[in-house]
Each structure stands twice: as structure tokens, then as C-alpha cells.
Image (cartoon, rainbow, N blue to C red; front, side, top):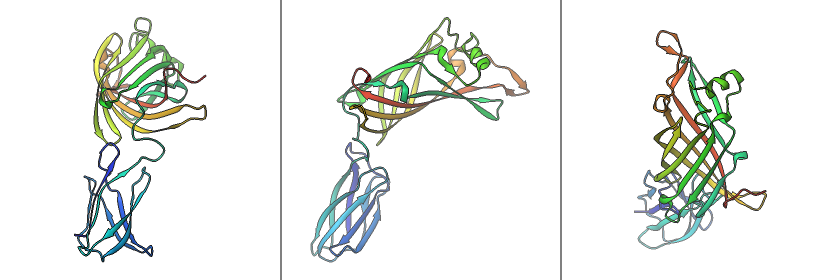
Length: 271
């Protein structure tokens, strides 16, 4: 056997399709191999004895390089190679994080007439993330002003605020509180939580992607996430619809929630 290696993140997840390159002391490439879905790299051809440089690269990660000495066996045992994510740490540091409304979007997409989509967003909201030492015990809470819905059409927004939909006079707030976090990949998680809207509470899972952590110009530290979820309007007693043709409704029965989140480390936002 020639090369044997495992490519992992700092959290132990496999880095799929990482590229491992081996060069000799003249800089000539002698091996190039791709990691499989388990982050494993193996080649069969033995290498001549001597010193080599092992370079591991992957999209979104900082490259790693090390020196390997090959004995008469012709094998390179690189062991576990740990790659660090570019632009930030593997996971946000533990502690409280405040959502930054100026750099966060809470949006929803509904199908219209079966042929196109209507997009809207909520402009007034607040939220807090608590990153635990045991990441799976982390929590998130958010409160949305239901009346702040904005689809770019005043008449439509007025209807969405009415009892046919959000009924904002009776139910001014939409809330989300998580009660579990499940890893599904090196930078993806399923957030289990409860969404309360129109006075109806339902379990809703968020498909969450972690995009990285880094400093901001004001001396703070920011973490970025994106998340999506699918909601059925009828689950929240929003049963209004208008049939414009046989089998075609004006508004689709499902909503796709799309979140782009920036959170700032600490209890409060910088002033």
C-alpha cells in the first residue's frame, strides 16, 4: 500500500472529496488522490524511500501540509489530517449571541397561481442564541412582530395581517423556541423547536447551515447561519384561499421559510 490517511474537521467529521497531494523534495508531484465519502484516502502503489511533503486541500478549508518519511515498505501513513475552516473557527464559541436585525433576513416564500412565487419578509424581530459547551444542548429563541410582514404590495400586506392569515390584532407575535439540536453533517444541523403563530403551537424543524465566524469592524465577533423550513398553512389555522380555476388555488398550501442570520457574540448588540 502507498498512501493511507483520514481527513477530518476539528469536530471529527469527514471532509468528503478532500484532495491529497504528495510531492518529493524537488517539488515534483508523485501522488494525487481524492478522499471518499468517509474522508478516507488510500492508494496502492508504493513510493521509493525518502522524504516527501503531504498537502491536503478542500474547498472551504485552509490547506494543511506536513512532511512524511517513507521507509523501505513504501508506505505513507499520514494518519488523521485535521482541516480548519477558512474564515473562522469550526463552531461558534460558547455563550450568548444576539441576532443582528440589520444583517438578518426572516423571509417566507409562497406559491402563487401555481406558476410563480411571492416572497415576503418580516422587518421587526429579535432573537438570542445560547451556544453550549455541549453544542447539542444549545438553544435559540426568536420573537417576530407579525404586523411587520412586507411583500412589497400594500394591499396584499394588509390582507396578510387580517384574520384570514396572520390575524395580527389578536396575535401580534410569532415566536420560536428550540428544544433540541441534532448534527447531520460537518456544518449542518437540524434544530428541533416549537413555532407559535396565530396562537397555535407546532413543532417545526429548521435545516440549519453554519457559515463561519469572524471579527467585525466594531471589535465584536459574528457568526453566520442560514436555515430553511417548510410550513403548512392549515397547521396554523390559515385556511383562506381563492380558487381561480379548477384545481388551481391563488396561494399555495405550503410556505417555505428562509433565514439568513448574523449573530453577534454577547448579550447585546454593539452601539
